Length: 196
Image (spheres, rainbow, N blue to C red):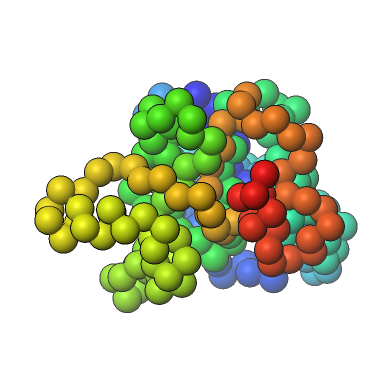
């Protein structure tokens, strides 16, 4: 499977280096290409793309300050034009835990109706799930909490709202010409996408 990882970049060079290192692990039979969408007024140092990675790295220069949604849309277009199978959106301050990409791809086998796969948002410093993620997303599936307490968790649970910070979708089944509604500069574009 060909997977496009799209990372909108804005003034976060410390974060982007950490994220790229976390993605730099062999992913089995999956072919990964990373697209950094640079929408920062001070452009990303070209040295970042000269490293030796297990994936192809592309830097796309967007207009400065176009916002998260439009930056993701540039990456979405690159993925569609490149005939990728899956699109993974990641915040620049994210971190790819072991098996993230393969786990998300595998989760699409859980249900034929599944359109988006979302990982748990875990804080590697505190060793806990992000409280915001628990409050707004885990709370949608009380069965997961019950199953976890009983020691019988499933690999996937259904939610109707998902965060725009990290998610994967299957491109051939995505019916829209854009990812995020360009009317949203930043914030709530994921709510609108969840509604669609």
